[in-house]
Image (cartoon, rainbow, N blue to C red; front, top):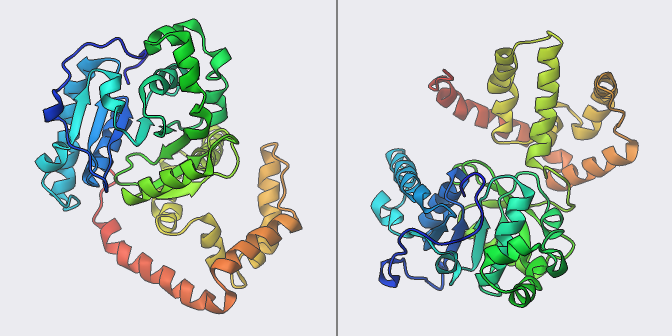
Length: 362
């Protein structure tokens, strides 16, 4: 969706019904609200998985750029052997709709891809609620805004007149449309681009219907993604909280003259990132220390606590917290399988070494 966009007033050519990809019971229609970079990336993902995709934007003039971007991304995937069908066949599943109702009419999922501004997202979801099927999953691609924050301005009594006007329906109709929104609205935050980074964070609100969450998870999984449930609403979810923790320390190290920007990138490129490309931070330290996570926490916990205190963070790893993390790791990997897993880790690093050496970071 274009920067500063407001929900629909029409404009642009709407393809006749015969031009649009036909829905399929196994691969139902997915609608994407916003034709920017993330919207196009989701179109690539779902069209590659066989779904008819209908893309809408408040500014139909964005469609020309979006079509070119779609073709470029599909061509690159084909060049690397990552597309099961021809780029033209996959692109043929994507239509661009000037009218919001045309994009959403048969959709089982509406993936909102508007800029990261809560008022804009509220306004868009008000418009979506007025025309989307009553059982459609409503998913925001937000990087940090929780579903409850979006919903706070979407209660029928809280929708401002401008939102009602933008939705193109009268106040009473919009109130009815908004009644079931809370049960169907989630955040589904992707890696970027989602067709190359398969993780997607699913963030429900307390009002989210469990069946909606199950349907969403199955739909994303069917498109090749790996859903991760965020069990409590927190700003930034998992992805950006972890990324933010690293970036906060990285900025501090640059500020303090400890390292340059490139020094820090090199430590991640050639060290942390290589292991993290196939195992996460908990498994990394679990496999680094004989005795696993418990032994690592005993040996390194005090040092990490001191590092945190330097930054004004006083949040030590308590015995109960360590015990919880250890129990979860041991459920995944009993200690009697630790040696074999360490060998597996080293085998993966050996397999990846030639690939890394053939890559240029410049």
